[in-house]
Length: 116
Length: 108
Image (cartoon, rainbow over all chains, first blue to last red; front, side):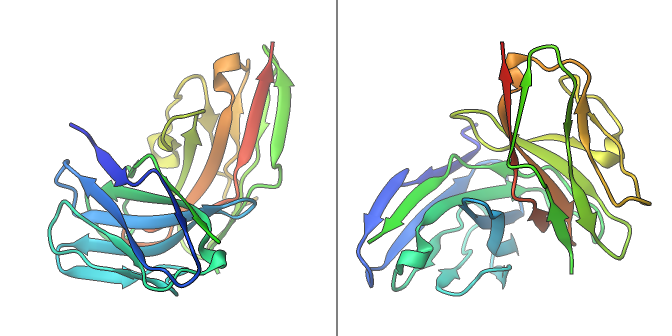
């Protein structure tokens, strides 16, 4: 199993450009999420999905869109990149759990994005 | 608001010394807490969770509800323990709130 894969590993954008960060998992996990990691701020949840066709916002959703058409894929779209979106982006997946219970989340290797 | 605080950005110890990485949380309900670790050039991965009450790689963490803490401890640090450690709090339906992380550096 490849686990959680992310592409690209590195990306440089100019302000105003758009792009999609790809995330895929082969573990048949229902839950998938996107985090951004910034120095001194830890990981912050951007968007998440509890299954195909279902997405919701996390702590810092502004400037990002997501969709979940299949169980395996959960792309993150930046519609108009801004320097404030310079960060390392992590995708994670896990089996879903009921309210108040949690399963281990498996993380991808990350995408380092720079917006000039 | 749910919040996780890791007061130390960097903790530097010598091999064989005890280690304690601090984590405090704010949460009104019954918390579920985790420690995730990221070794150099590796992915973020789960180290342990409080409900398991187990020791992983010699690390333990006890939930203290009175002090709202979940400190990570190891009696004798090893060089391979050097990594970034994140404390995380569950906030419903698999969502996690992470602390800012502590870098542990174990010197020979």
